[in-house]
Image (cartoon, rainbow, N blue to C red; front, side, top):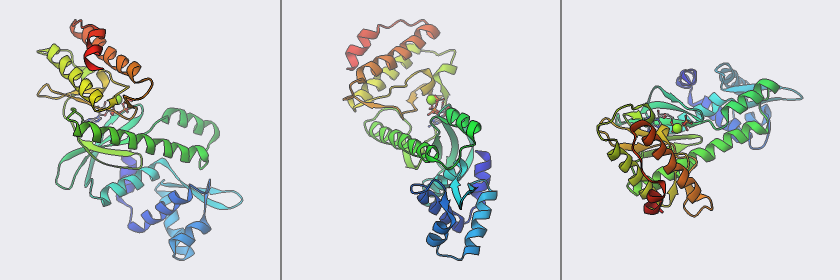
Length: 289
Ligand SMILES: Nc1ncnc2c1ncn2[C@@H]1O[C@H](COP(=O)(O)OP(=O)(O)OP(=O)(O)O)[C@@H](O)[C@H]1O
Ligand SMILES: [Mg+2]
């Protein structure tokens, strides 16, 4: 990610144009032919080649030489397109550094133009399995590649949608700021994930606050579906924020109640183990659903 930011900072607007053309071409071609790029770029062949060489050296695209010369975006190339759009639509202004490398995402710290602290969450579903595939077959620029991009765009859109619904309903979630491609921008929340916390002055109060937010989400039509002590941040003022929403379900979903049960169970189990608080799962569920 740090490398991507370095590459991103060197990009000129002409480089972006070429990246965008390749992105567009990837919905049509496995490897985007140079002729297609030159045609859409509307510049001379040598001008296009100059840009393509730059992008290739920055590791943002890969050149493929088979029966014809073609190009595909790399993951850093896709990241750069998203960053470029977030900057040009004035959602972010400056980058900080990595604050979390999750299993399914990279979280990066940034500032808005009015110097408010936000995070950029890059969705990276199935990253590990994809890497394995690539290592085994040196696979680039095939269907898997663009469907990986697509799956992560869908995941980011889903998370952004949930955050908007929940934030408006008054659930304690990070305020959503915007999204582009496979990224979501939201307010930075200071604090620690619940699982890291060994002592609390009043754990029952925190537990109740989490359950109140689960209930409020449910009333807004949303079930988290991956709730646990890893996706709750406890702020320094001891209020909580629920994060990590891409896998949410609507309450109309056939399995909504099962997931609600598991969410609540995870939280109750944590409070019982860590703080010895016993609360009856069925009682809680009756109050929510
Ligand atoms: N709004 C935020 N403010 C501050 N830190 C955040 C925020 N959102 C996420 N983080 C940090 O980044 C980490 C990963 O984020 P998140 O849980 O949303 O993604 P994930 O990759 O799905 O997580 P997992 O590792 O559970 O798969 C969080 O555990 C937290 O440390
Ligand atoms: Mg998480």
